[in-house]
Amino acid sequence: MKKALDRFSQQSKTYKTYRPTYPEELFKYIYSFCKARNTCWDCGTGNGQVAAILSRSFDRVFATDISQEQIHNAIPKPNIYYSVQRAEKTTFPKHYFDLITAAQAVHWFDLPSFNMEVNRLLKPNGVVAIWGYGLLKVNPEIDLIINHFYQDIIGKYWDKERRHTDQSYSSIPFNFNEVEIKKTFKIETQWTIDQIEGYFNSWSSVQNYIAKNKGNNPVEKLISTIAPKWNAGPQHITFPIFLRIGTPFR
Image (cartoon, rainbow, N blue to C red):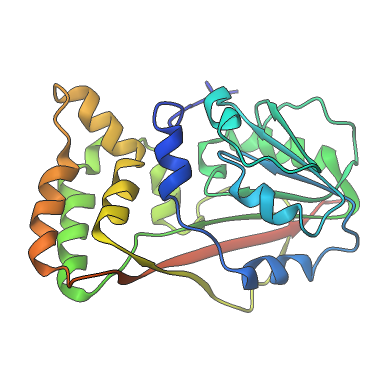
């Protein structure tokens, strides 16, 4: 099993504040494949953003992350049970979960080990759903600046696992009976320039850049370039969502 990668403890509070939220339609679509809503496991939960939403529809939600800082800053709910555990090897009993989720997280895992653990933990009629989102879009002019920053300024500071999100998780080994996804989803929100700056600062690549460039933060120059092109007030922001759903081999 590969070494666990913790890329978000350092900026866990920033992550909690500035990460985008997923649309309700995405969860309704995932739930449509679930036969029961008793127990759910959200792995790589981070700040508990997804676990909090799942807690509205499931009796018990178990949420895990390798980062104690992320768990410390996670959203508390009476039916969410947080713990620090690797997604590839947990203490949960066999065939325990109706649904297992991993949102913008699975690309960090040791994928063969994670697939084995999911097959161990899912009930025979259980469902696994993994999803993430691509690079944000504002408008064509600002998008060009962001794309340049993403590819040319901090491109080499991404961990190699980032390629899976660039490929919309098509490169993720997914050893399940896969469901055909018949809908498309996207995150839509209104952000100020301060919010988009906070979001960029939550990127692991930005933190890698700062660590290797004597504390220099590349986001400051990015925002100064974007600012003259940013209309007063919030802008409409979209993120494309990619999704894979499966059931265990039995």
